Length: 304
Image (cartoon, rainbow, N blue to C red; front, side, top):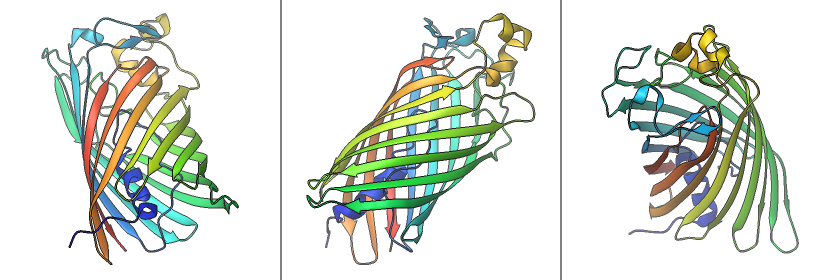
């Protein structure tokens, strides 16, 4: 017999698969799994773009006139509730990037690259949770995580899978949920990045999320922002002096993204549950970054 998932439990599940959107964002959210709950999720996302921000100016084409550049990402996520106030999340994506014009990347010498990207491991702690007389709730938490490149990919090209940096992230978040399951969440994070071959800028990241859930579905809309703390613009004299295309990881990369994600529960019994997610994401504005949009789908399985 098919049963619907309890809404207080299903909200944690979507938070795993909603991170498969356009660009790298901190994978932390304001929901916590119960102790010893284990969730595994797989997702597939596709994005494409044919315009690019050269500095803060949106150009009419991509670098090197590569035409439309598309990316496919297959990801696996795992989450585990250690105790009531502590949980952990692990992610690992496999990415394929190509351009439609067949123009070779000036660094990698190919028009298509694919492989495993970066392994991320985060610990998240609940600092405070308060329930008010009107049945609304406020929770405050923090997290720390490490992201390590494990695929051995070329980090300096236009079609690179990532920037090849080891990143140490710390973030804090606050979430307020009303008695009728409408919630607002804000988050701030700092990402300390290191690469032996490139001077990759550290970055501050912010997000604001508005969502709603009941026993039939979960949905949220989110704005995510990255602000690099230094770096130079593509096409500037600094960029040319540093090596041109080979210096792309050294550039200042800023962006604002919009996300919309939905989760629908399919099956549940006393020991496990299953559901399907989908999402849309778009880059609203950027600096030395693509103007991409994309979609994602995912499958989620949870064991109590």
